[in-house]
Length: 532
Image (tube, rainbow, N blue to C red; front, side):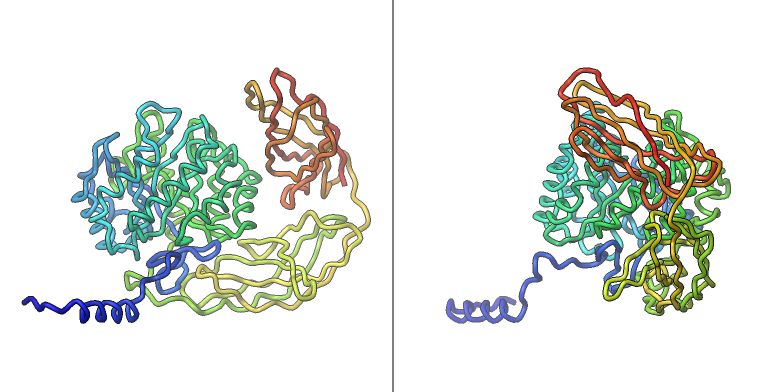
């Protein structure tokens, strides 16, 4: 039935409606959303991804994989889609994927694989073209913000022109919002997802701010670049310190570019409350078949990698919690019990080992780890985090009194009360000697990358080290990892990070740096090392 209104009456009604039903502010996210470093569900419950990738675009007939992945306790599946670089997945197929995710009570990360290696690999699509694809399947995604995440483009830039990532990514986010997408967006790093030039790390704040809804999570892919605990921790620390949300969007137990440290990846993800998504369920080819978690899509035939990620320490079965959106539980608002009073042993000039009695958690999200603080009046300092009931502190100041306490945290982000405090005083000196060597990992006309190794050459442990080297004329530091670098003229001083200062007799650790130069082949050639 149609009812005509006079112009004045219609205008008045329109005004009243606009007053009563005001539009949501541009920054108000719906459904899954980020809050600081965490991902929250619509009800405010913290959600930590524990899942695997499924190469759907090449295996559209393997729809039973969704139920199989769920049966192995995953709470998330990352689904490979294509807009035409590979067999295309249209709106009807995407709608079926969305239905399978909901039926199987899985948070779904939908990713466009067309962008993989853009700028380096022939046939790759730019991020702007990926946005066109998402617009073409938008009808299948409307109203799915509670359980669908849109991963705009997989590994969107190779190793060529990685600096273009920032503008391309902010542009893609802006277009997605302008097209009306309300979903939590996920963006991958350049350098084939591994960000070894730190473009995403160093520009993440600007990219996050470019999202009018402030609802973008960053994804790092950890393969051969992340083959040591020091490299993994340094990268995760950078996002934690910046207060930005990060997930480990891909990783494996082995790769053609090196041997990833999957044990540290999984342990640190669990300790820090970060999501991880392993690659991949089944169907790998091109020489990386070892990354299959099951043989020929048979969930009863787990490979060694499948056993590790699903059933191993810090694996999916032990740490995954189903999203409350699916009715699997109520939000966890119960804090863990207060941990025991820490005790200090092995106190040196720059370190100490703390141990304490464990907390328990009855809220359902599971105990995730412990935070160790130095009591300093109104602003206490976080000294470190641990997934166990002990921690080896390093980087402390000699001859200094420390008063410390511990708090437990669960998978939902709830914090316990403060434990009782313990005080200790570091000693006035260390001991031992050290050497440092450097190896040029890669170089080009106007720059190069160096990996340095520090070795304790003494007979006693050391608790800290300082390496000094001189840059050739015109050379400047462009970035570094696993050490704190300061520069005076052409002299560079590298000091250990908080996690790699303790070295036993004969022990070694590494740090690295990137240098820009005006041209030529000159590189840093000599290093001096002092231990404390």
